[in-house]
Amino acid sequence: MLDLLKNQLLFSGLLIAVLMGAINLGVAYCTFYERKISAWIQNREGPNRVGFFGLFWGFHFWGYGQPMADGLKFLLKEEMIPDKADKPLYVMAPAISFIVSTIGIAVIPWGGYLDIDADGIVDVACQVANPDIGLLYVLGVGSLGVYGVVLGAWASNNKYSLFGGIRAAAQMLSYEIPLGLAILVVVLSCGEVRLENIVRAQIEGGGTWNVFVHPLAFFLLFVTQLAETNRAPFDMAESEQELVGGFHTEYGALKFALFFLSEYTHMIINSAFLCVLFLGGWHFPWIPGLGLEDTAWWAVLAKMAMLGTKIAGCVFVYMWIRWTLPRFRFDQLMRLAWKGLIPTGLGLVALAVVMTYFGIPGSESVWPKLIWGLGGNAAVLFMVVLVVGMSPAGVTGRQANMPPISLLSPAKRVPRADQGTAN
Amino acid sequence: MITEDDIIIVDDMRRDMSLTERFYLPQIAQGLSVTLRRMFTKRVTLQYPEMRREPKLEGDLTDPHSQLNASRYRGVHRLNRDPDGRVACVACFMCETACPAHCIHIDAAESPWPDREKYPAKFDIDELRCIYCGMCEEACPVDAIELTYEYDLVGNTRNEMIFDKGKLLEVFDETCQIKPRRNPRITGYAGTGSPDHQPARPTGEQH
Image 1 (spheres, rainbow over the protein chains, first blue to last red):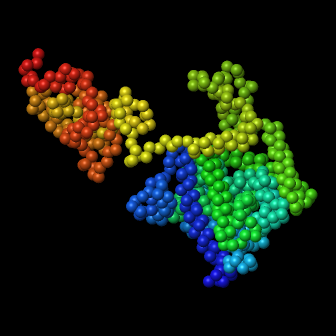
Image 2 (image 1 turned 135 degrees about the vertical axis):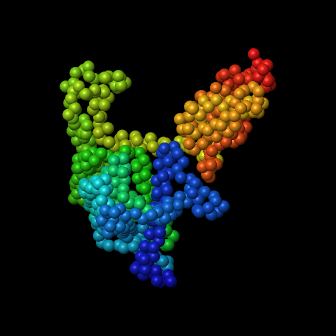
Image 3 (image 1 turned 90 degrees about the vertical axis):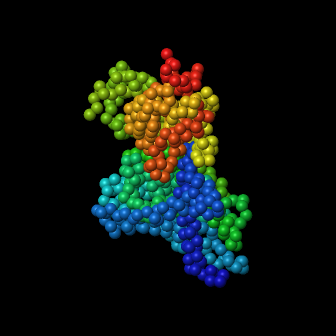
């Protein structure tokens, strides 16, 4: 039996089964914790009533049965297809969305190598697939995610949905660029596009987590991933206040649930990706069993738990941000990408290029990397602040139609407290 | 186009943004710290079926979050009893007339007691139709109808939610401990609860 598992193909199959279960469960509890965290931020309790179908003497288990109840509700609702919808696309869109967001798990290195029978010879990699171009695969698959949104929006035959879809597409186009630039920084400093080797480069020799060397790139990647997953403050595709429900206005029951699941799956996969690129993947210093040479089954489990913890932390930040920040207006969103993030990203790539030219990433000690990285990041940040400080504040929206203050007679200017009585 | 006459400049609004505001991030960090602190403050939720706001009269209120002002809350109606235990209503139809939702139905009959002319033979309130505005209580000349602090009112059928005289008197019996009947503003009717109440007498003895 154990010998069968030494076959990487069979092991990958087992891993797929386990990961799909784990991630779907994680997604279910993401929806639960999304509601819990929103409640905590607003001084409420959140869902705390639903137990497990009244089993266990009806004990409520602090609401932990809520995801099951939600899922059951979605399952039992009526499947509606609008009359004028493009039916094949309408049905396909949630599926595309879900599949595309899920297949990203294939290349994430969940726990390094595994030595099943403890004979000192590594048997399998704890990774569904380990292609040479792992990072490019994640990039390609990640940007496919918008197809589900756009197709669903278009197929619903609803103008609000279409608005949502178009916004999602435009947003994705803009934010793919800083996303690519941030990833390029990692590729340059690790010299690798194979995800497993990127983790290795952060551990071995003079390696350290990329977040310490390139904090700005980490931040850039995080922000663009918020945009890529359509999470607040970049959830232009949903915009409940303006577009009803945005791209999923016309969706209900299980098809809506698929959109919902794909959003959270996308969050988890993106967090995993962020952790692998910048937070050292499954590695954590000072904890035994999380090293490169630890290949026993318990070490691999510990590594997976460590990566899971990091992912949970990232997902928490996603939720925390969602319940803190209001949504960007569309022109602000575009200005942030094209005038803010992309120039910053270019600066960071230039920094990484210079560092590579001087051979910093290959050095055996960690200090040159830290000094160059942090110094360079400080320089880029300083330039960004300088540019922001020197450029005039943008006049947008309603204010664009107003004459400058200096043209108005002083009598027209009233202190804030008196504004009600001015007329 | 906005003309200059239409414009009022509120000073603060056209103030230039400071550098930290234009750079977004410090402001975002500030917002995040606010929400993070919120997460660890005390929750305000009252776990309803297990915890309830305790009904109290106005003078005793110390914590409006967990206590209910019983003297003001407009919940289920009750029909007050006079000190002799009879229904205090004199079937004047003031409440039925005042009711904006037309949920009160009174059948008046000649009073069996000598101290008043009429009394309600039937007194029905459709609690589903009622909007709990309190107009009936305002209109009542003898303060016979009052709204109580009871708010969790449920039933399985519509008929069940039409409260008749007996039910409304029962509500009085249940709530008069916490919210005693207040003294009628008009005390001209004998036996409707004036402070110097005398037992009911034949009408002839009144001057």
